[in-house]
Length: 163
Image (tube, rainbow, N blue to C red; front, side):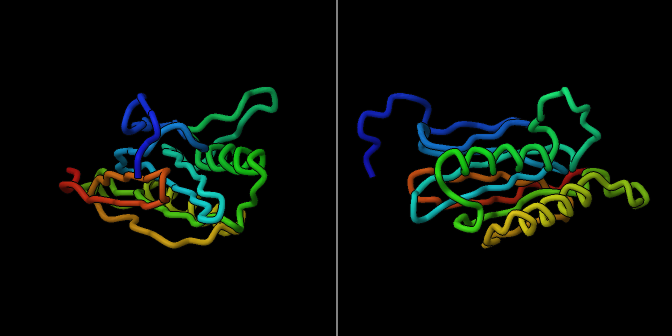
């Protein structure tokens, strides 16, 4: 499909704590370890986005703005953006990736960030009513996630084990 004059980057690379929703770039990409990436796509309106969060949540002071580094805040910001676009969460397909155990040689504890990030992602996808269509979580390998904002295709590639 032609880009009809697009002169910007072919791909927007999301760094930890960043998110994007809307149009204006052909594709989004991110590299994740213990972090989680959530993609959203509305096939009817052909609009979507992605977030890359580092931690599941935090105790946010009332006067402090939301921060994309935290899963609950990042997904909340995506939900706000999709509502501003005149859509609702139930119309979106979601993918959930990441949450690798970045220190597999250490004794497991309930403080594993990757596991907690995965749990937060599952919980928020369920809470908002997204349709979950793709999942690859856990293990101890990093992942590269790429999403087309032209047709909503999501590709995920596993890398070398961490540690």
